[in-house]
Length: 122
Image (tube, rainbow, N blue to C red; front, side, top):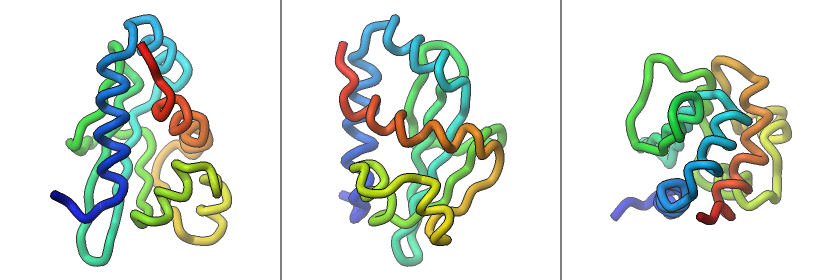
């Protein structure tokens, strides 16, 4: 098992999204229309969470993409604080703890997306 704390969120988000009704999944896609690639770092290791909310009913995988709209690189602990809502993405970016490539407008939607994925039900 991985030492990344963010892995537990990957597992629950993937499960929640897969169990959600097609209407709820399509609502998320419609609200975001974005491909998110989260590169999570811990020491010299890294893990990737790819959130496709651009096509179909959305999916969450471990793959990477040359076509991601938002590529966010962040430390494992900082991501946990962001997911739990104790800090937002803008603050992490301003503190230099979050590096972003691509569409920064899409990044601003991640605060709400994390909350949606944590509470998504069928």
